[in-house]
Image 1 (cartoon, rainbow, N blue to C red):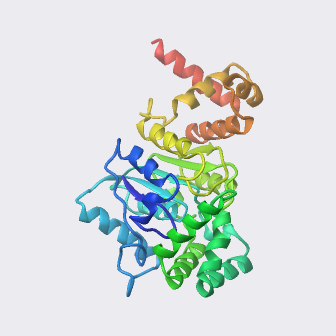
Image 2: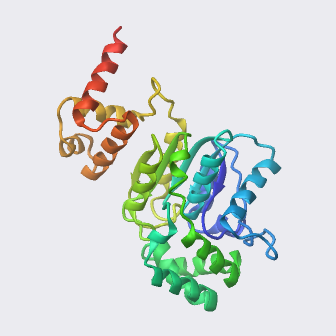
Image 3: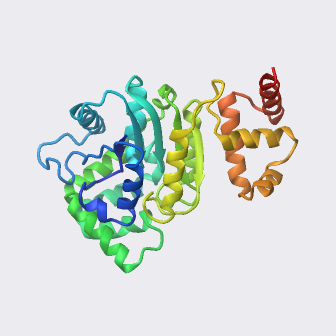
Length: 313
């Protein structure tokens, strides 16, 4: 599994940040996890490197080639989600499955133009102040110790110049045109209260990829390894372990919900039956419609009834 954890990185420093080490250790029980520092960050070369988006994509593929893996699964978080989706779109023969977390298709949607310009300028001119400003967008209600740990991690990950340039590249990247080219099984994970990247931006990503599964998660921290990180990990592992059925990539939960739709239950009634939030059921129903390429609950019911009949033939 090739992993890109986002904007700036440090292979060693990130292991001690919040629950990143625990997340990685659990993930490594199931996959050979390939991590790498972005150009200009962490343990990678700091001078004379290509920090453009295409340069970052090329660096990730070079890492995969260096370890001798022709095909791989991809996990990308935040800005790393853009990179992972781009690789899946441009090199479908190399990607077995794609999981993205907390990403947007266009960096311009993260904030108004004047805010984006101000943040980049603050990072470039006052790295310390820039870090503190961004911490509150990434981590929900950080304690003093968490704030100190995150500031320390970011300072060691990149210089102010590199951090500002990579952030500027992120804000200027728009991959909406590439999303329809992604053909690999895809899960889009997004916390419903994400403060760094709004939930509706994740919904847009899922809508742009044919057959993608949108998985809403609890919490508001933008970092997948902060807060309820085990829910993120479980979603990743469940999706990657889920086989396809009859050519349809519906999860077990989606099949269960489709059958309840067939019984004539409303989203609120299904939510009560399964003890989850109505919004979660709405998202599942939206996923089912997208995957089956239908527009109504009646069509979902007809498809489910047909599957039942086939099972008895």
